[in-house]
Every structure is written in C-alpha cells, then in structure tokens.
Image (cartoon, rainbow, N blue to C red; front, side, top):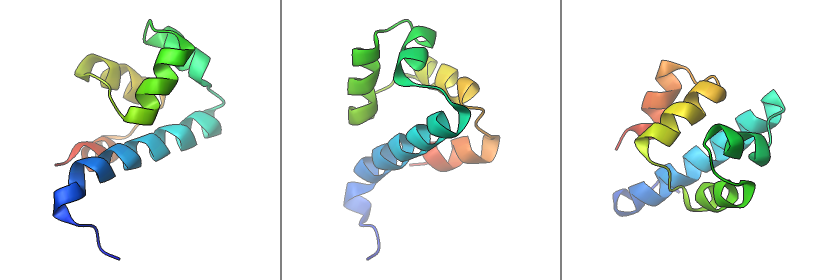
Length: 79
C-alpha cells in the first residue's frame, strides 16, 4: 500500500526510529551509550526514540555516532 502524504511526518519518524535501532544493533551500541553521548538518561533516550523527538543538535550527534552517510541523512530528513 502506498504511503499517504498526509501521514508523511509519522512515516519519517518511523523510518528514523527503525534505522537507528538497526544501526545501533549492527554497531553494538545500546540506548545507554547513546544517552550518554546526548547527555540524557537511557530512559529519556528510549522515550525520544519511541516518539522520534530529537532536536537538530541531538540528530547531529546521533548521525555521527551511527556513522550515517550523507545520502542516508537526506533520505531520513527529507520532507
């Protein structure tokens, strides 16, 4: 089923969350590690991961830590 444009933000949040979980798993990094890098607790990171609610500075750190390519960043952030 094609994605409906009205739900694009929801789909982008889901895609970002799934990509982050996959990359964290493949690189052996856990929520506690990522929370430390973002200067937040593991619980706060888990909540933000679930909601897809990160600010620009946090996204920069996340992409750096998870070794995101420029193409992947554009794909995940394009509205």
